[in-house]
Length: 257
Image (cartoon, rainbow, N blue to C red; front, side, top):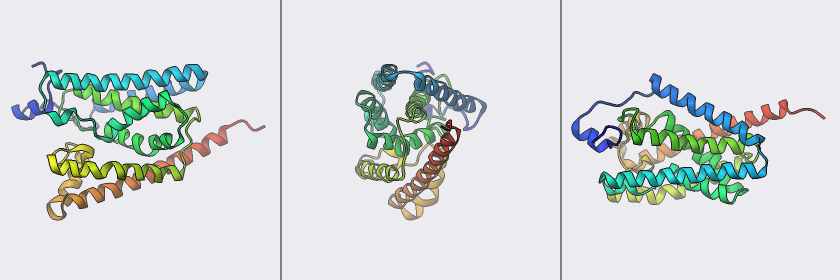
């Protein structure tokens, strides 16, 4: 099998060491490319009229869904185990949310979910990727960075254009959504030994693996999940502070009449 299509199960089974390190030059290049793409396309989106923005949103949403189905097809062709087919991670929900918002814009509750649920998850996914076991020229590695980059870009478009104004109420709405999403996932993870939302098994993500090792052997998975949730609540408040500062900076730069 070509290394481009090689799944992590094969990499682990063969004991290969072909991956990359977090914050290595290649990883930093990806982060810079995603940031530049978000900024440049955000400026483009802000400059477009209503019809142009509508077209950009729909292209983004349909592209994400196409890439998700392409991944499912590739997994099926190479007979990867079935749990890999089920899109139950938070960022999988984000991809669907992008398409829903693209088709029916203006839903503030969904916009707030982007600000406080989907964007933090997507940002953490590219800063601390779960694909470090792959070489750079690998389908699953490239898929991860492209998908999460598009989710981040979509929110940047809405934020830069003023279509989304994150607020503190939205933070708790997003927190409630994540709790409701996590409860059945926690049960599913325990029942089928899978790792959706990274609360079922020890993760390949270094930060989560460290937290798992510190908590699970002594206190169990439930305490780990609660600690993970507390960390996420703290992260959401950091994001609220960032949005508040960016909004204040934007107002200070606005022309005075």
